[in-house]
Image (cartoon, rainbow, N blue to C red; front, side):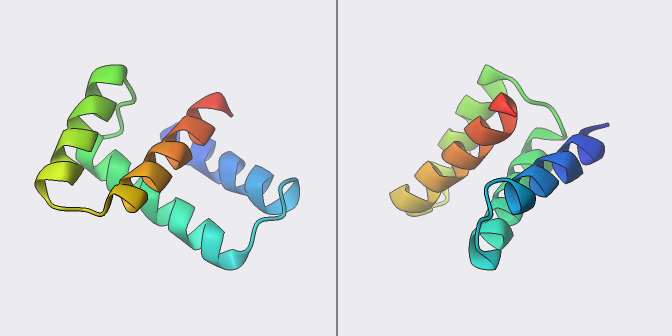
Length: 77
């Protein structure tokens, strides 16, 4: 089910928002990393744990911010 939602999300981003291929690639990577971490679960707790994990692994703040933005956009979709 989550895979169907992700495909629909990227169809929306590609068609309606007309984002660049680099942006789409980054968003796909961001969601892949998040869902691998969260085992396909979306919850406030999982997002908090994900942020903590990213910080622990010394991921750049700008990358974490983009990943959160991607997750937020996906959830709003």
